[in-house]
Image: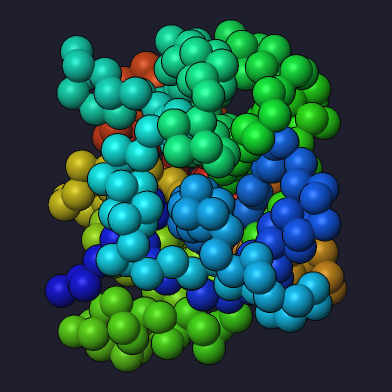
Length: 347
């Protein structure tokens, strides 16, 4: 059973990112708070939690600003504080959140942020702050901005109004327009240390066996949100199927591939997506280790590293296309397994 963490806008805790908090506080203290920040890092690492944490601290009048420069900074705000409560409820007049909208036809969140999602930003920034302080915009999942939405945001960044702050939360900065990135100050969040991860998961997954929590921490690579998502999405079982798939290479027969596909798709609706992500994560770890001269798994040594890198890209494209074009997930799973078998086959 998962004692799930609150949504980022309502989460009072942020562990392992004290340096990032200090960077934001020191920028404000020195009167050099850039008008746009790109908060970057792996998915689930705490980027949105930090963005909303800074937003409500700023909207509350920066209560920690009285400290001396060089002291450890904290953006903590009591959950009983009225600003905390309004930000958590999405009702603060000086905070605007831009994210992927809901597709009523498909009954699911869209995969892109559209220009219509960004249009409210212009009017919001032209308003006088309702409470006489700052106006803050959080763009959550900025890597999802399509070209029109990104261009619309870029125009607003070129001439920002005073006392307006934009926080772009992004897991893949390379997907953003270079001109958009260049107008932001980049704040990168590093993965949490393993002891911090294990302590956090002990609190959030109290009924999960310690060995399973340790496995989730390893799979998540320092991203607590990722660990919780894997716990909810049958991630440990699917990680086992990834290991089984790779261990079977290069002799992954069609019959065995069909059997693995059946087991992948038993359970959660997004099982294929989780399986594909875990496969790519495993490939990336093996490639990094091999690149450093470390021990490589048997399946990796069968072919050049460039071939496995191409598989990493191919699985990502297939995963994205399956969601974008609503392709058959069983067929997508079989195509993934077939591509892996082809890559591993002796030449």
